Image 1 (cartoon, rainbow, N blue to C red):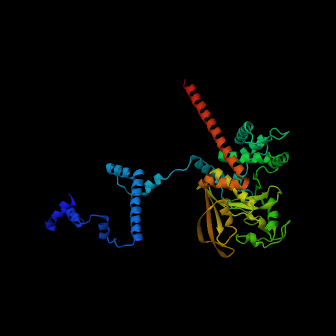
Image 2 (cartoon, rainbow, N blue to C red):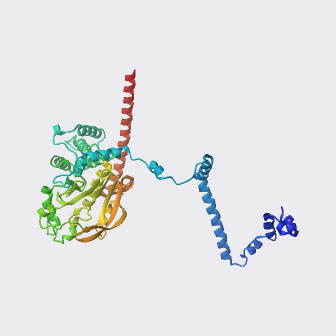
Image 3 (tube, rainbow, N blue to C red):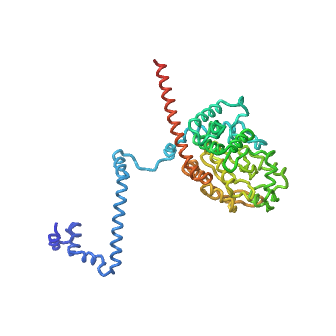
Length: 465
C-alpha cells in the first residue's frame, strides 16, 4: 500500500486498523531525511554528534553482518539444521562423554612410562640410597665396560650409527684418523640408550661429533673422557658427572663453604644455602651426610664440571620423580656464587631437560622460594612458565616458605623452547644446522622403514605361495 492510500484510512476508527496500518499512519508525514531526524529528536543536534551517531549505527551494522557471516562460514547454522532434523538435544556433555572424548597418549609415551616404572621402581622400598639412584642410572650415558659387556641393543645402535656417519660425516676428517668422527658419533648415539627418542639421539650425537672432531687435541680429549668417564653427559661448556659423595663432596664443600677458594674471595655461605633446607656445613663430612648426597630413591644427582678446567661448578638434583604421570621436578642447581647465572649452569639444566623429554616425560617443574629473587631468574631464562604460587608450602629452617611453581611441557619444549636454548648455547648457525640434520635423518629413517615393511610384506606373500 502507498503512504497516500494508507493516509486515507485515517478516517477509519483506530480500533479497526491493523498494526501495519497504524505504523504507516504514524510515519505518513515523513517525506525526507530531515523529517526522520526531527522524529528522533536529532535535527537540532550539533553536526559532530550527528556524525557520531551515524558512525555508531554503521559500526553496529557491520558487526552484526560480521557475526552472522562467521556463524554461517563456521557451519553453526548447518549444525543447528542437522540437529533439528536428527532430533538430538543440544546439551552439555555428561562426565562419561567428556572422559571418552579425552585424547589418549602416544603409544611411545605409554611404553616409556611402563619401562621406567618397572626399571626404576620395581621392588624399590628403601627411602634413601648411598650410591646412584635408579633415576640417575637411567639418565647416565650408557657405555659397556668392555666388548664382552656390550649388550645387543648397544651393539646394534653403535653399528647403525657408525654406518650412518660413514655415509655422511658431520665435517672434515682429521689427518691420520680416518675413523674418529664415525667412532665419536656412534658412541654418542648408542650411549643415549634405546628408550630415548631418535630425534634426541641424532641431535646429541651430531653435537658430540662436531665438538670431538674440531682438532686432534679435542679428539684425544673426548676419547680420554670416554675411557675414564664413559657415563658422563657431555655438553659444550660443561659435563654432568653422576653425583658421588666420595668423588665430589670435598670439592663441593670447598666452593660453597664461603672460604676463599682458588681465585675466588671469601663470601657469606648463606648466598648459597640461605634458601635451602640444609647448610651451610662445618666440614665436608657433614655435607656428605646431608640430603645433598643422601638422595631419596625418587631423586637423582649430577655434578656440574667445567669442560675446560675440569673444576666443579656445583650440583644439580632431580626430585619427586613420578613416571606414572611422566613428571619430575628439577631443583635449582647448588653452585658457587660466581657461577650463579653462568652459561655452565644454564647448559647443565638444558642437558637434563633434553634427556628427560627424550625419555618421554611430559612435564618438568621447578619450585622456587617466593623470596629468592636470584633463584627465580633461572626458570625464566630456561623458558619455563609460571603456573602459580603455593602459600605456606614448606617450613625451611624454622621459617615459613611460600613457593612459586614453574612448569615446562613436552609440547612447549618441542615447539620452540629447545631451539631457543640451543641457539643461546651453541649459536644460531648450529641450531639451524641441527634442525636440518634432524629433518634429513627423519626422511632417511622413513625410507628405511618403508623398505622394511615392503620386504616383510614380500616375505609373507612368498610364504603363502
